[in-house]
Image (cartoon, rainbow over all chains, first blue to last red; front, side):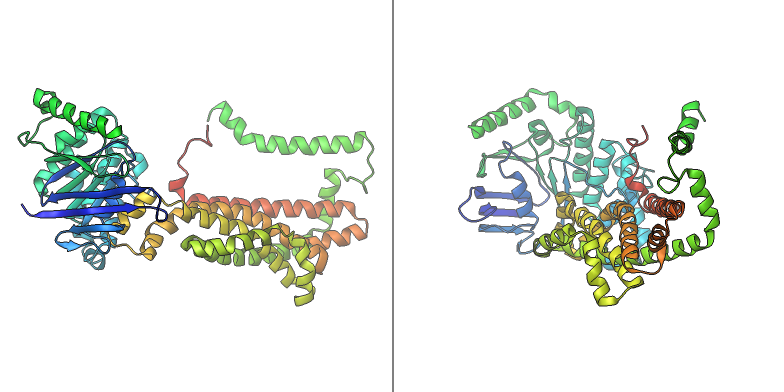
Length: 260
Length: 257
């Protein structure tokens, strides 16, 4: 597998030189088609990592490479989803899904001509996350879990090569969260998309990821890199095996150390 | 319809009738002279007697107000978008605007008269000057409160600032904008009537001033009622417009409970 996202010895901070850095000496490589999870204590610069990898910000030191090219502008090949679904309340589910296609090239020039085709694609995507027939509803008519599924679909509609997830299930109840784990697991398996999941739920990280990166507290850097060898496809039952809980336990130990 | 619902529907009328009845009763009971406080019946009589001048001047006031208000909407929207667009413009203009807004607009009327003479122009301009501020502030607030995550989602796709403005900023600002129109239209009436009563030969403001000079107190009150009616009608029009245009933002049951 080739490297897809590479951060090499990256340091980055906000608000003037001299103030505390958000990340320092951060190096991390995610391979093409890999599911990577980044965990760490709160405020460890996970969100900065998201912004750096998508070209929303550029590092003061070090370099960021995505899909073989140094990042100098927003990468355009990434889809993002956050803890808040951030859907537009004046648009229906369908219209919310079409939003990225109105922005990102080459679709933005074709949106009028290929609208019917795009709508079909959106319907299919919605069906694949269990939202068939919901496309005419407004976001506020959907439950929290359904809104988050829509948000995931919006991140995927333009068929990005990279999916960035920033605690996307953090605000959901435990059962809905596990349901959505399976949704994202299946989407990733079907599309072979590269995923970077930022989370502080260790079970989530271990269940979904091929590799888990543990970050230190501020300024953030990678402390531990842990390969997860649980066989795929993984069923939720795997979360009750000793191997799984041992891995979670081990990672927890690293986090506790990182917080000190 | 349940009993409570019926009561809620009827209560504005009951309260209005109640107020008028108390007013009428008090005037008679305390033997208040008509030239001091005319009873509602005398005001109604003045309404009938002076129906034509009242209607004509109401129309002029309405026209003046709406022109000034229209200018305020255009200018306010533009300035609000500009301020919301750039932090530098915001920082530069905000102190100026607050300073300007702090000036009582009645103090500007003499200057406007100096420039444009007595008549409709100062009244239109006063209505405009007094009513654009809430529109600017609301539009700028709507833009300033775009969720940063949503901005990130779009920026990562290569969205330009104009894209974000068009797809998110402007639709998101509409509830703020239409909400501000209700405030602005009311202020616009204040502006035009102030200017009419100081520096015009037409309009309800001028009519009331003349009525005062001739001691036709019921007519003064009739003028007030005419203004109140115009104000209510325009406010209702703005409220309906708001609900029509931004129904998605008004789904909370909070105000209904």
